[in-house]
Image (cartoon, rainbow, N blue to C red; front, side):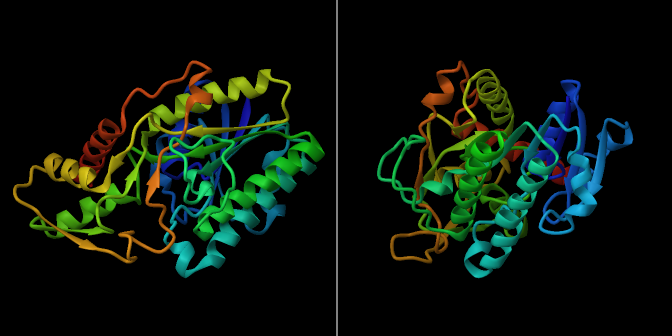
Amino acid sequence: MRTVVTGGAGFIGSHLTEKLVSSGHEVIVLDNLSSGKISNISHLIDSSKVKFIKADLKCCASRWGRYFRDADAIYHFAANPEVRVSVTNPRVHFDENILATFNVLEQCRVNDVDLLVFASSSTVYGEAEKFPTPEGYQPLEPISVYGAAKLACEYLIVTYSKLYGIKSLILRFANIVGPRQTHGVIVDFIRKLKSNPEVLEILGDGTQRKSYLHVHDLLSAIDYSLNYLVHSGSSYAVFNVGNDDWITVNDIAEIVVEEMGLGDVEFTYKKVTEDGRGWVGDVKFMLLDNSKLKSLGWSPKYPSAEAIRYAVRALLRELDEK
């Protein structure tokens, strides 16, 4: 197959690109490198297994839209991944998430692309009152501009799917961790402890509890859900992609400290809200119901704590290699 991966130089996108190449796909990566790194896929580019195009999806479709021609599938993973940024600079998420997704959909329409896979987020649920939270949970009331942007993208995709026959797979990710990760709680803790190994500032009160999934488990989940959609009669499908369990921020801190071989580290807390969140717009508790995906035969290999531990080890190796 000929596939296009937007955001293919990013954390998740680069792992996906590797997986597609290993499966024999011809892959074109579109990325503006705002959060991605060319080094993530340089080995694939150098071996002529991937064609890389530096492209800004929020504009200039005439420059990158032609790569959608004759594409069998578009994996739309390009987005601004920083939830906190959406509070202080919401325009970024409108441009890089909503506008970029609209432009991608337009190029799918005019180039008669048959299949679109979209990386959505658990943040579309907002502060759910049911755990685990199923795909059919209502009402969907995001509490961050990031979550609202992802939900707006979902609605655009569903509409384009119904109007123009673009078969669409919407994947609502939990917190994904692993090698090449550039943001999130693990990266934050490692950076702080590298700077000061005696004190670790934790955003929030540390009791925040969420689900974490290793990127390798995510890749297998994409395979299972995509196989379902392709062989179903549905024009689109929505799947939660998360772990069976969840873990607190305090537990993550303990794992990072242990993996870094540190002794007595003092934990301090920076609570931005009265109920102990790390920032305004942060969902304090998140556990997705993954039973729909598991009914297809998929299951996560690593529980949340183990996924965190392997991710920490990979990120520390990456730092040592620099």
